[in-house]
Amino acid sequence: MSSAGITKDSKIFVAGHRGMVGSAITRRLQAGGYRNLLLCSRREVDLLDQGAVRDLLQAERPDYVFVAAAKVGGIQANNIYRADFIYQNLVIETNVIHAAYHAGVRDLMFLGSSCIYPRDCAQPIKEAYLLTGPLEPTNEPYAIAKIAGLKLCEAFNHQYGTRYVSVMPTNLYGPNDNFDLQDSHVLPALLRKAHEGKQRGEHSLTVWGSGKPMREFLHVDDMADACVFLMENEVDERLFNVGTGTDVSIRELAQTIKEVVGFSGSLEWDAAKPDGTPRKLLDVSRLAARGWRANIALRDGIRSTYDWYVRNGARGA
Image (tube, rainbow, N blue to C red; front, side, top):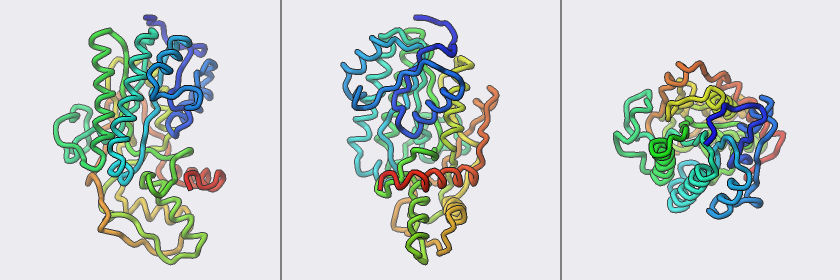
């Protein structure tokens, strides 16, 4: 396997380049002058098909791989489609990571999720807290799949000397997010509900849960910047949290969205719906020590995401 550093001519495969995270990584790479990107749609290569993934990577032999493809969703989708979430994510990650190794790929980045950490672990959450307690039940299948991908990378590193790095982002949002009210995350769902409520002249906006849980939100362009930063600096640590290091309550988030959208009605809380994990704030000191920090403030990020949503229509509607 080659150990040469990444150059602007290196072939870089972004698995899942049409998703929110993958598209942001692609934009960041293109802006950084990387000229040789391998981008394949699901129609061209189904990442659930082991043979198709193997054939692609054997033929293309990329220098670096970003595993950004995943089946994702909010609390409701995670809880209802539990088999789909664990199966599809396990298959995608194992297909890509295994095929990458056999295609001679030494450097790879696996994108996970902060839901891998125990539901009730100490805050802020350090990378060392992994597997120290029970997971949040509503998204346990997805979390287990992501833990398996992380451990698969670790195992290849241990056995074969690869440099497969895992990054665990906090709650992401931004362009190309999923705004479907049935299976989206809280921020895009609230943006859409506030926008449609404003259009219809409604007097109230109903929000799931109590509003008390604390959440950290990271703009996907910051996430992409962190990923490319780690790639370019050829890190040797195996796991990095990626976040802002600050959090807000869901109630504060809803109020900010209400103001950005210009919805004049009141907020109402449906306490019969689940809150999920009480708090989930990442300790981002390991990445900060390397020299990277998030730059996009939450209100600014929400405003730009809302502008994107208005320009591009209701994706997922």
